[in-house]
Length: 313
Image (cartoon, rainbow, N blue to C red):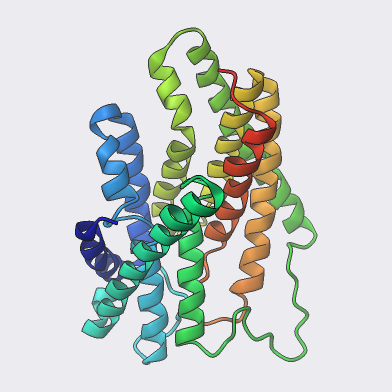
């Protein structure tokens, strides 16, 4: 454990609470894309800035989620699941301090899940997306500590609750999941073909396409902050790209990579909708559906799929 980064995590959670959860997440996406494109020069920034104490979602975004839930509890925020509004505008130091405390909690959760549990139980620190799982656990703590709505919210009397999209919404979900999966699967396969032809630069981008796709999708949430109906899709493109990387590496088949990415894309879209309807309907805090989706699918991509399709690249 890096004590310096642990201390800095307090500031990361506080900073994100001040500027808002989604704005902080947008910076996660921006910095990870910039760091990947910078190659060796940008590599340190990925672990310290993008997924470290400044903008790691389990520190920054999770800290902002906690601050919003607390602000609702003390009557300073109308909606506890508001993850867009910069909470510095509330002029309440206690709200920002809660963000900082949960920044530290997020750091400790990720360290425990990855370095301690991952290495000693699963034999790998990267057994799943530990950042995403830490975001989920932190949000569950917020729900239990700061709200009375229970883990899955309280359904009003007489309301029929659905846990998956209905009718045309289901068709839309399937189409967008498959389409986005096909897109990233095709991009991964194209870089994979270039890598097989001897391009070291393409091989590097190929290996980083999960993070790159995530970064683009996360940065795209800037349009949601503008009030536009932007479809948050990092829970689709990140796991789909990861699947495509494993499948291409194990088969050297572009078609297999694209098909596998499309399947993962559909699963990502469906799990995301299920998590959102399950945890955030009629609730006073935010449990992140994309984070729920990502850790489940990355568990498959990191710990299961490579056993079935070991790399031959």
